[in-house]
Each structure stands twice: as C-alpha cells, then as structure tokens.
Length: 357
Image (cartoon, rainbow, N blue to C red; front, top):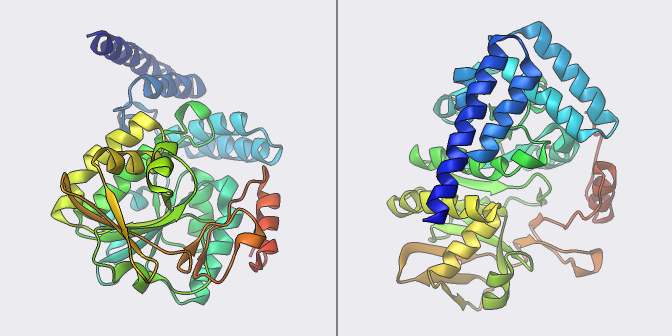
C-alpha cells in the first residue's frame, strides 16, 4: 500500500513538472522547460521521449545550433553537466534527423538474413566508436545500426555516412542516465517485433575477426559473452555473469513475450546487464558446460534458452596478461578519460588509427 501511495505521489508530481515544462516552452524559456521536463522524467519511469515531441517548443534551427555549439564547447572543457543542459535544450528545439526516426525504414536495407548488429554512442565516446567501426569495415561487416544518443553524435554519423537511428537521450545528466538502458532496450524490442534478430556490441568490444556465425548459428534464443562482474548475485550463483557488452537475441514468440519483463527488471535495477542476469537467476536458470567451452542455460519456468560464449570468441580481460587469442576483444577500460581508454586499447594491440578520420 505504501509503495502504491508513493508511486501515485511521484506520478502526480511528474504531471506538475510536465505541465510546467509545457508552459516554459510556450513562453520561450527553453532551458528551464528542459529542466522541468527532466524532473518529470525522473519522477515517472514510464514517461517516454516522444512526450517531448508533444510538449516541446517549435523547432528553431538557429537556437538549436547555438545550444549545440555551446554544449560542444563545455564538453571540450570537461564540463559534462553543463554540456548536457545545452544538448538537452538543442534536442528540445531540434527538427533535425526526422528521417532517422522511422526504425523499420532505417533497418530494412541493413539486415542480412534477418540479422542486425546494433551499437550505441554519445558524442563523448565517438572516438572509440570510430575505432570499432573501422574494424568492422575492414572485416567487410555492413549490417550495422548505430543508435545516436545526442545531436552531435547524429551529426557526426551523418557526415560519415554511417547508418543511424536517432534516439535523443539526455546522456550527460546523471539523473536521467538510466534512461539510456531502458530506452535503448525499447529500440531493441522494436527490432525484435519487426522479426529481426539483433546482436548488440559495445563500441569498445573490438572485433578482430568476424564472429557473426559463432553467434547467429547457435540454436539458443539469447547468446552472450561472459565476465566476472555484476550483479553479484549471479556471479555468486553461477561463477560468471552474462556480459551485455556483446550479446544477441533471436526474434521469437518467447523472446518477444519475455522482453517487457526484462525491461521492468532493468528499470528496477538501473542497468540492462543487472536486469537480464537477475531475471534469469530468479527464473532458476541452470547451466551445462560443454567440452567445446560453450555453456547452455535453461529453466523449466521460462521458455527461453541461453548460450554463454567461451573466451576464445569474446574475451573481457581486465589487464593485458589475462588476454589470449579471441575474435572480439572487450577489455575493461577503467581509465577516466577517452584518451586514456584509447591508450588501453592500443596496449592490447588495437590500431586506433586517425581518430578524426
């Protein structure tokens, strides 16, 4: 009862901030409107980004450009929070990239045998994404969709003729950063509902060889890399966790039915990896290790099968000494700056190339 009352109060307060945002936008106070809108999102996990399209101001290309340029300047100075405020205002004013909001139209030319590789990036991580993307091009892998999380990432993808879908999340504010996990999952849910299987790869999971057949040829509904990370509950129970920096989901009746529960777990736990692992743990998943290093998980309570990939397919080393030959190298980039993260990739022998090329 207390939880229901608390949720009702949060929803009512969210509506107040939503109304405030609408009034601020109507009177031209864009940045204040954005701040009210973000408060509404914080209080209502079901508030969708399309709400902004309904209550936001009229598109204004001049003001949008001013906010983007201001945000870029703050970002270069390491002022992420201020950059986020400017990018949020730019998103609210944006009429840009509307052609990149039709998901089916965007992905149909990209799919191969109903399979699609998906990654996501905000502008601050774009230099690492470019390393990832160059490797994919060298391997001749083209069935890729980039989810661009802010206007600068979308602009840069457009300039480089990289296929993308525009999902403008306010990715720099801590208060709404969790939306990255739930909203990008909803994009993936739409992909599944279109009958397309997806393979998600983090932009720092660098492909050294083509691993598509190792994933898509598996009979399991979900195929995932592994790590020794979170959630601790799964690590304690299984001795590993499914690492969602590299994982696939096949579009089936059962995975589509499962996905709403997966999103709810993610909302509750604040991260997609924690959400999937905890959900499978709660359903009593048990694992069988095969001689070839693959592990297969199942439960009689959930009609979905899972395969965990061996390290020779995807490796998640924390340091250079832990690494051996693999097809996809996904090292732990524990450094605090993008330049330092790229330095770690170089230490693993990754060709960083020209970051601006």
